Length: 374
Image 1: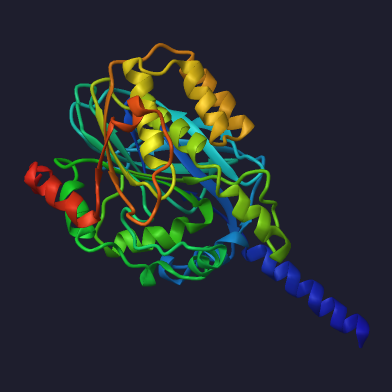
Image 2 (image 1 turned 30 degrees about the horizontal axis):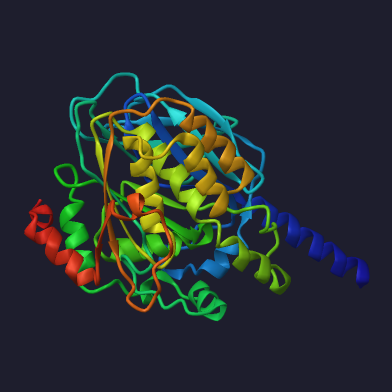
């Protein structure tokens, strides 16, 4: 009887293994024809769950495929190849990032589809890649998520844990922001929209569900990647280290925005908006200060060290800062949280950001400036 029972268990495991497939969970991405950053994660799944059924807690436990060679190719609207295949390797958490070049430049804003391959096998999962022509001047909107787009009550670690158990359908946007942002982000004539947040990577699919419900066309989504403080398994013993890792915001955002600037045409202006709950005004002002010469590369690296940056992020940031500044512009807008005491920051940087007391004030100003009617 015992042998029969063990045999059934072994057969059940074998049957289940046969149903496991590799899924490429791709992010929307924005770039130019000769520099497009395709990003995603390799997951091992039995079936791809609908986004509205996924909570961040479920995503933490997702099985992923580390250290695998993955290839990416772009297809045009007719399904024809628009690029060669480009290869990369997934990291220890299954993430990959591959720079792709189209076969020829585009003369207008165009959408391509990314397909991924492992050993000639086409993986489930496709991603949209938005390409700007070289003469495009933007602006491109880079927005934070919590307290800038979504209502977020974060007063304690317990509030963060509660958010992790909530699917996207129960998250609530700030009043007026979905309509304003959707009007801004109409493709192709609108303002391309990128969400950049220190929110951990395992909120991706639940956030995508919220954005889909709000009718947003995202051209980019950047969430904070895992750090060495968050191990492959996540249990109660990991919670303290996870919460500590949330402080690594400044360096991650500075690096990501500079990478975005590198990927876009030279004349594109970034419109940066966020809130002062974390370091958004400081991040934006520091980038502006480096671009206009107020800050040297060494001073920006010192700020990243002071406000926390992971070693691998610092190495990449130093590499970008070693290159001469390009003629790029940023405008900074932040929503002020009245209850918070303003952080100390150099006056020459503080004055670079325009603050508004509420999201409604920001929406009214943008409407008055004509941005809401594009």
